[in-house]
Image (tube, rainbow, N blue to C red):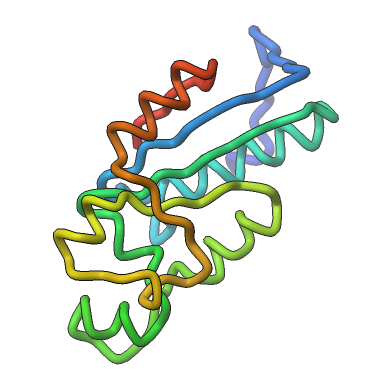
Length: 144
């Protein structure tokens, strides 16, 4: 019996009318080859669409995950490779779906990145201040 053939009963169904979430992403953990944080943002966006809910989702990349916000040339220089940013299409898709993707300013400064190194990404003061601000505004913090 394959996994898709096994019945699954949902014991605690969840349906929300409004979702306000900030993802604090300081390192990349993976589901196979896909960063778990990106998978989880895709999942919640799918849930939100299914619920016909309103939403605000902010992804704050910082520390050891800041590089996912770089354009190809800057990514190659930072990671010492020549393949380009493998996350750019995933990030762009999340942005198209309404996720606000941000980079921590402190992370950018520590790595010597400027706005011209980024792939259409906004920079905040720093991840801790921004996450605090959003939590105080009623966002639920998810740490990835």
